[in-house]
Length: 118
Image 1 (cartoon, helix red, strand yellow):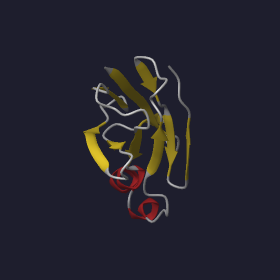
Image 2 (tube, helix red, strand yellow; image 1 turned 135 degrees about the horizontal axis):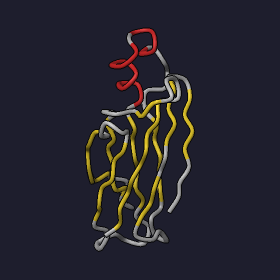
Image 3 (cartoon, helix red, strand yellow; image 1 turned 30 degrees about the vertical axis):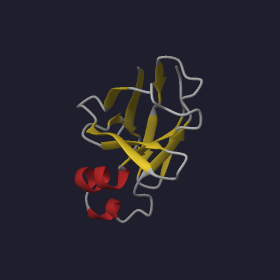
Image 4 (cartoon, one colour; image 1 turned 180 degrees about the vertical axis):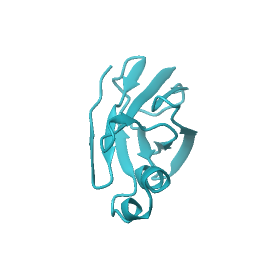
């Protein structure tokens, strides 16, 4: 098992992005995407999901999608909802990851910043 976690922060308010929707797909060599999880961050802007990688091929990759546009539309109104950035998409290779892969994300209506840690 590998844990994928994230702490999502709203950089316009300096607060946690509680309730933001995050989905994860396993990207197969065939080009198809297989759903792994679909969740919402807790009130502290955090997610933590255990995934079973035992059947992964060596070239399996994962994609996290953070629905920032929906988050800002629901928290800051229509003006912010007009942003051209509606999702933050992160593709990751877990082939050499340890048991825990952490992806903190700072979001704003017109930009984002992310990094990863173990």
